[in-house]
Image 1 (cartoon, helix red, strand yellow):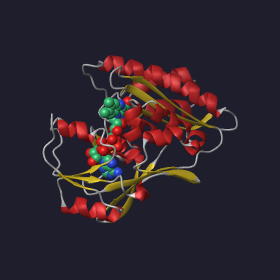
Image 2 (cartoon, helix red, strand yellow):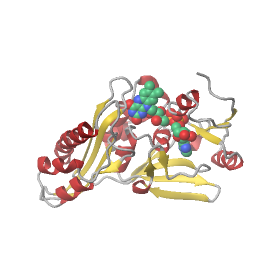
Image 3 (cartoon, protein in one colour):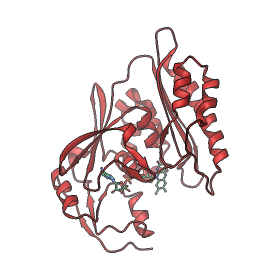
Image 4 (tube, helix red, strand yellow):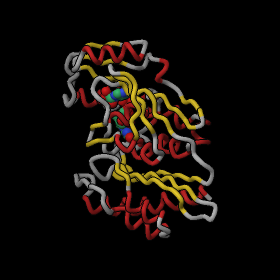
Length: 282
Ligand SMILES: Cc1cc2nc3c(=O)[nH]c(=O)nc-3n(C[C@H](O)[C@H](O)[C@H](O)COP(=O)(O)OP(=O)(O)OC[C@H]3O[C@@H](n4cnc5c(N)ncnc54)[C@H](O)[C@@H]3O)c2cc1C
């Protein structure tokens, strides 16, 4: 199928891109195009203009500044091969390496993934676990959005239509911190039927002092598994805490997996990811 006609523009600056989005309410940002173009071909999305952000240098790259700052137009391939990311944020490099296939990883961007807020996408769980902050620029200027407020609903992020996501900022990771991403993937697309991202921090006595656990694929948006986090911080053993992974989460049932199956996958993947992250933290 062919998409509807559209105008194509490739601005050179963030301000130009924002001005184009503001002046054209039907316009859409084009990043790697691996979610948007299929949606346009299926006529699920019919923008009158595509604002290609691939020629804006400030949106690309990985910068270490205490934490790690990632330009929205950074591809999965750049994330999985960056030594800075591999060493400082191994969960992010590992997650990027598990997305789709090489063609998807060469074009798809971290900003496109989180802005699209696909319920089965991998990155939303990982940025939630890593407690990222999203930087966006719109006609009213710049704002920071805490990741806990970013994923609003299925395919809906907190970005306004005329806002551009510019950076994903990951705070510094302390010592005795471990993380892991475990995914049960759809055999055809590679998307997560369920994916669980875990970040744990251990105190000097080896007890969990902080943790963030996020689940993708299970429900309409990436969600925190607060029941598991509370159990671990309360002193529960990993296996017992992981059994609570289904508590308080919203589940979807579709042709790929039932609600019950997704709930069971969530418990199993949470247990596996937690064991890996604890091992790394020790
Ligand atoms: C065959 C195939 C397999 C795939 N497998 C997986 C998988 O296993 N796991 C997975 O997570 N994903 C998978 N994907 C999706 C892929 O990761 C997409 O690349 C990603 O979801 C979107 O990133 P993009 O850069 O291509 O964004 P686009 O498709 O260009 O954009 C997606 C949406 O985000 C908006 N947008 C993009 N960038 C910005 C920005 N900076 N600011 C504001 N809005 C923005 C666009 O307007 C659009 O609405 C797969 C895709 C395909 C085609």
